[in-house]
Amino acid sequence: MDAVTVLGLQWASMSPPGSGRSGEELMALFERKAEHEDDAVSGRDAATRALSVIAVENDFVEGVYDKLAKVYDLFFGPTLHPGRLQALKRMDLQPDDDVLEVGVGTGINLSLYPKECNVTGIDFSASMLEKARERAARKQGRKVRLLQMDAADLKFADDTFDIVYAPYLISVVPDPVKVAQEMRRVCRPGGRIVFLNHFLSPNPLLSRAERMISPLTIHIGFKSDLDLPAFLAQAQLQPISIEKVNVPRLWSLVTAVK
Ligand SMILES: C[S@@+](CC[C@H](N)C(=O)[O-])C[C@H]1O[C@@H](n2cnc3c(N)ncnc32)[C@H](O)[C@@H]1O
Image (tube, rainbow, N blue to C red; front, side, top):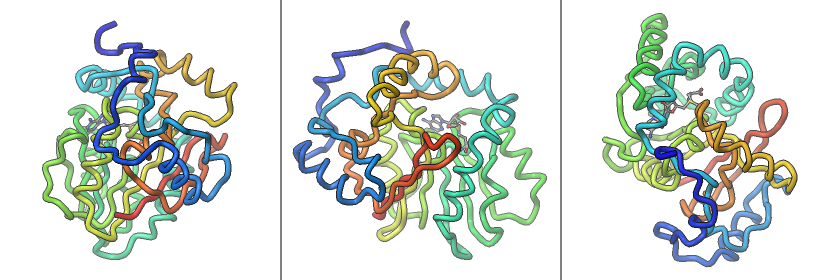
């Protein structure tokens, strides 16, 4: 395999981008802030360990989503929708809030945002964006703009948005930490950075299975083994809440404040 590489132990020696704290300190932070005990899985080496057993490149991911565009809503629409609804409820958007959705896909969230909000959606898949544009055209009267862009290289000034939201994106991208750093950069001070995603289970049996199938699930668009405590530690994010969503409750809604 070239674009998807099973790295195994090589990842363990990766140095954490921009991390100045020890793993123990960061995990203590995580444990203190997490709303639910289940999320606070043990993580002594969270600041240094691999986020997933596999690595992907943008070209590969883009190819997967260009192929998925036609069927995405069918397969990932209703099943993942409770999480999307919960995220919108939790965000409690105010009129005129500037929202950035990172990885807007087919625009499945667009009708969920209040009409008065200014919504910017970015995605790098032309086919997914085409679906989003069709959807936006059907919903006249909303303040929506859709742009083709890499989440790891956002073309916005610092401190632009009130809310920066990544629904079902962060386990898809090659470099989740870089994407989180970009999301933080474009979020205004006091604004919120929100992730809705599946993460590696704290349950040892389930996590073993998720690691095993991750090289397969990436072919349908996501890594099933993204390590949440390691991701938060390496992205230097301190969540104010982490809640389980969807049925079964294997997905997490993570909210941080800049
Ligand atoms: C699982 S879909 C999520 C779509 C939508 N947000 C939802 O709630 O269903 C992930 C989307 O992220 C996009 N994506 C993946 N990597 C990206 C990147 N580096 N930059 C921008 N978009 C990316 C894919 O093209 C795809 O449309």
